[in-house]
Amino acid sequence: MRSLTWLERIISVFDLRSEADLTEIYDVIEKKWPEVLTKRWQATVRKEIETHCRSSANFKGEEIFVWVGPGRYRLV
Image (tube, rainbow, N blue to C red; front, side, top):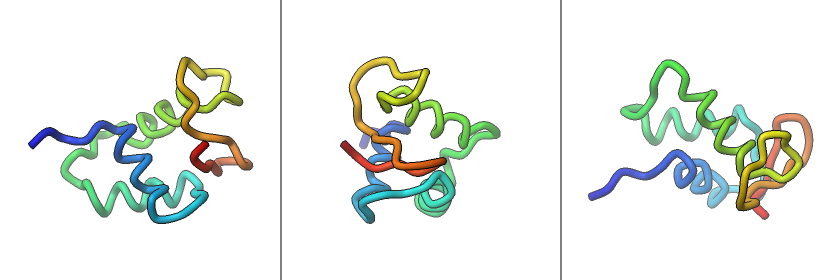
């Protein structure tokens, strides 16, 4: 069975709620997938969100997340 990507893991957090802040996202990932955590895994999560959030300076493609407020996002 193939492993989930970081983006797939982040999106799955939103299956449980309509909006989430980074702390909530980190908590869920930490509990559900402790085996994939690296030293910089939280930075990877932020990068994935920013890459897929139009309001981010780091936006690079498909919009998946919408910025709701400081550190808070929802799915498009």
